[in-house]
Length: 356
Image (cartoon, rainbow, N blue to C red; front, side, top):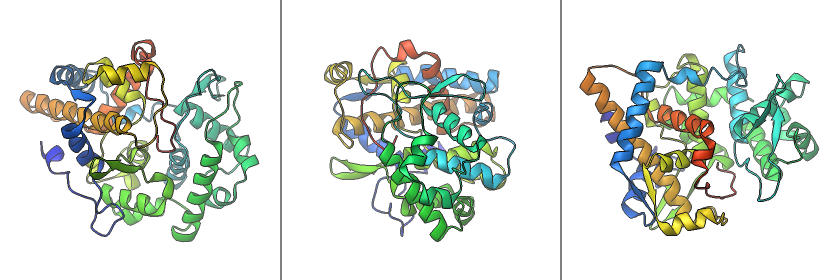
């Protein structure tokens, strides 16, 4: 288990993250301390078998991201990276409040998209009519009216946290202009193919990506958007050019709403009756609250257990396969979207936050 056991260290010593548990260490720590959630080895085995078969038999891998035609395709590296950076800067909190209509945007084929894909559709719609949303100068100076136009809904619903998205866009654009020559691709270049250095750069420079909190006696981090930003660049560019990283295995799963639901549906994670009752009542959860930390931390831990098991299966079969926590996450996220009635038997935790 080279990648699992050797990537538990803290981030770079001179980084903002130097005294904070990284996401993988956070998962390990939460597993030891959690009161409401346990990891079930039998569930781990079941998911590992499905992931292994998907990789070996169905060719499941990094190219699954490229198959979605809402993602950037056919552009140059810098344009693709800037598109990814803008999208991941506002990639959070799409679910509606109780009784409200869900935010949705029609894509180029007229299909109504929701969730993350509604964000992609909105960005592509804006670019098509000449709004330079991924340009750093535009981002730095974007007004509320402009952002409202970009994220206008094709349903009666509205995108949540519009003011927070505006702030994230403005702040990110200003940092790109002042420190990185107007393009996130220079952040990628500065990292020199090192995932940890790139995440350090992201967290040190872009405030909205600082996904960390206090849990028990430790400061822990989940870094959902910082990690998915790196992952999206890796998959979009097929691990080549600026998408090549020597230690992509350092990335964990992306602790959000949907993957925890899949882990519960597969019985990888077992919730206490108290937690189930709270979720079924759709009781709001505050950012940094104990149960939020446990759901997110145990999701990281559970996916790492699945990853270890898949690695063992490949080793026993004498196969060389590409597998990491990113692909485990992709598998479970896609499964959640394809099996919504099943995963929604236990509602997701209703935590309104900019971090996921």
